[in-house]
Image 1 (tube, one colour):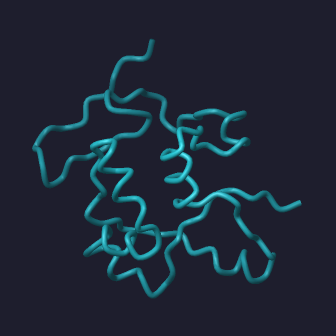
Image 2 (tube, helix red, strand yellow; image 1 turned 120 degrees about the vertical axis):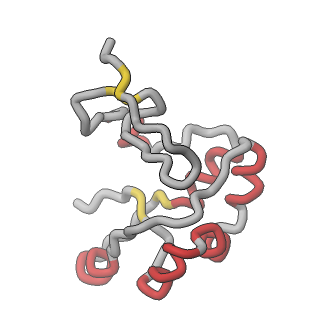
Length: 123
């Protein structure tokens, strides 16, 4: 059984531009993201440093994920839960023994702040 989970919209030809102009690359594959991000007062990252290529899983195993970035944006836009049914059942599982003040993962604000990450105390 192959689970239909999420995937990246990006391809190998996008890799260099993902480091330099992520919003433009995302716009190419999901132009509707801009309106939804604006509605929520969200800002797209300027770059990302890695993407996991899944070409072999698609080509050799016939993997055809049902959920992708466009699906998430459409579900947000229509007021639906953006998570897949499997993600809704599993919920959020942390990878770290500590909680962070801004979410489940540590975030380094490299270019906008000198502030160091401060782990939140577990409750």
